[in-house]
Amino acid sequence: MAGLFESTGGGGAAIALDEWEASILRSLEVQLLELIGPGPGGEGGDPLAALFAEGPTEAPADPVLARFFPDAYGDPGKPADGEAAAASGEFRRFTELDLRARKRDDALFVVRALDGLGGDGVLKLGTPDCPRWLGALNDLRLALGVRLEVTEDDEEGLYELPDGDERKPLVMAYLWLGALQESLLEAMFD
Image (cartoon, rainbow, N blue to C red; front, side, top):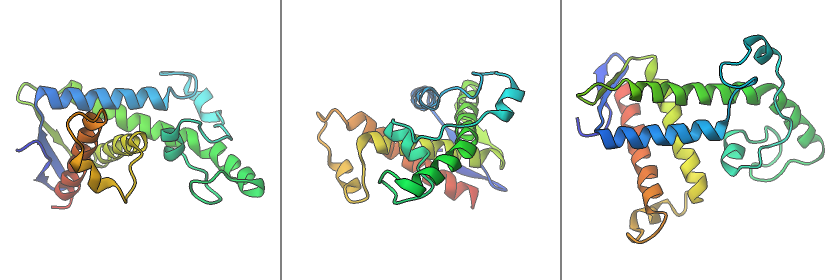
């Protein structure tokens, strides 16, 4: 393996990660967990309280979270007004907590898998694990893309950043995560 996912057959995948790669991926996932925040009642909170918890009605102020949990109605990228704002708030109230929980669970799943990585550095994912990894990698890449203000028009320019550019480490992580996503998708359907 060359640091990308390879098919293990039947929808499964495997990847060889060196200690440095695993550490970077784990660190990024932990940062994402911190951004998403704990569930209702905190980590390991009361499951009954979580069942009856209502989510927020306002869009998150953080641009990454706003991208993760956009308004359901109105024009994308523009704040909803009037009826669209009310409908978006109502939709968010009933959906955002579940979306956050899924993103949190996927990120935590990746962290736990990385924590259990054996001495050989080979991580094997079964068929049901691959979509969770794919979702977690997508969330990381989306978060970095928002922080870097990447658009479809300027993604090519990321390959040409000078070494002294302070964004270069994040850009390298963004591009690496894209390669991981692509290789995982190929492995899943190979």
